[in-house]
Image 1 (cartoon, helix red, strand yellow):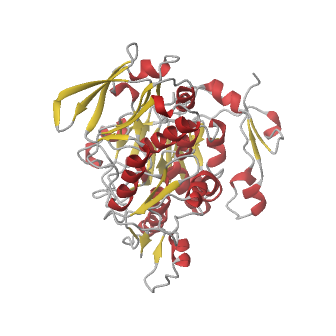
Image 2 (spheres, rainbow, N blue to C red):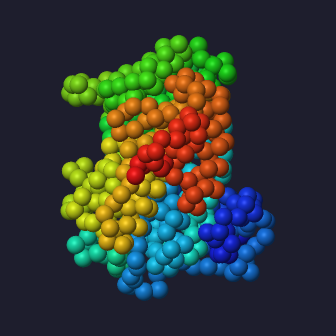
Image 3 (cartoon, helix red, strand yellow):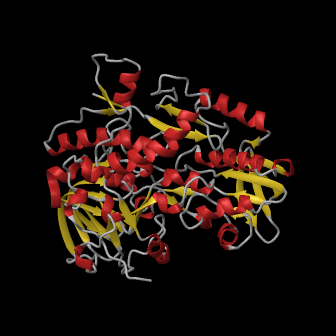
Length: 495
């Protein structure tokens, strides 16, 4: 296997809006990335990793190896961004033109995944390589990337400590650390995931997502079970999307009559927004999918192919269910450094920010975005896009000692894929009221919505959102609905 090299040329990260730069093709050494066994959810920050990156098929940086390391045990910056996921990369792209090297991003992973694509990968509609880019490519070249993870946050003294012992002083902090996926919380889950032919699978890690399709392909007969944990999750609709895709796969492959398709969710509703919940119940009833509410997975016995569930209305009651295929959405929670910083977190360990301004409730120089925050809305990439415009406006004002002026209304979107060609495009706000962009009823299954999810949204993500140009669909919504009211609203945020 050839050694990996990293592309550091400045044009790919230039803030100049050039079509040539946006549409230039990129070739990536996916086999080398696979060999690294890098999991974007849990990365060894101490690993010294090299990589090969070739835009347009040509080696860059004269084929030299580039090592990423901290040259000093103490650094200082105007803006520190913790996390290189959707929120961190987007905010870095927005502030890079103004602050340049005064922006530091702390992120331990070498690669960045477009995680909303994992559902399609699990259903056999996309390849894992379609979802990944090198972190050096999605971060602006004119910010400093420290390949490390935060271990401790000291908000009263305005610094963080990294796992490798680097102290980073900041004037302003954006926490975009995402959610920690914890496969160890359910006894037997990791054993089942790593055991060949066990039928246990999960779309919630690049290490396991491809096993979902192979498990469905190897199905003969029995129960096909899908779970939703008793914790917040990334994209609350994803656990049932794969259920609908799998059911259609079984229909197409002639195996449906021998399958009992079951969706066990810890929630008390199938979906929090009534309009879309009604549509999803119709889908389940028409296709013979059994839905069990308040049913939480607590253990797996992969040798026996048995899953153990508790009834959340009566936790002492445990039920064993045999399975042929078991797709597990694992428990998730805030990253450890947040849980260990009670001054900045709510009781559940999430960054305690104002739900409208995205500013911390007690520390005025700290802002948050995305899954690691206390925002009472669905944790999706669409929500991050809408939040990014609000955060940018309010953080700029904070840097000038001015009060926040933009307000986030909780906009989020969940494209509920219901098969290989249809989708219910859910969009809603804090009040769980539909906030739809398209001029048709998005509560109905739609082929157009499916292709938006499958083809258009990944393009928007890589080429616009991560480059700081996409704040959500509010402007599109106004145009399609001819809504040009005087009150200006930007990407789910009103001023």
